[in-house]
Image 1 (cartoon, rainbow, N blue to C red):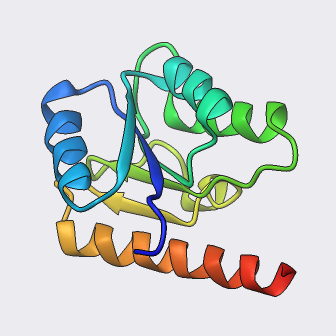
Image 2: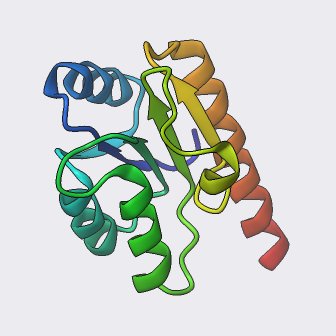
Length: 132
């Protein structure tokens, strides 16, 4: 990894969020965490993460609502979002495609998540290189 990437993890389930945060930090990522979509939106606005990993179904503001607010209220910033789902998607993949590159199933497979992050960061690096 050439520069430390900031990942925002948004999940109302602390028992699922905490191990993910710990593992990402151990792998060299800077990690911010939020317990719901409202807190996730606030952190995304303040910190401008390189990627967001978010649960879909949360109280107060779900993952899709958070993504809509990010797109509407943080203009000019395209933050990739990886949605996590416990297997049942209450939203169609077509609905989610406006906000996300990927939707991964829970329980999360670590190798799949790392491959997804590597893909996202390689694409961001390529775009950055093109603009230089």
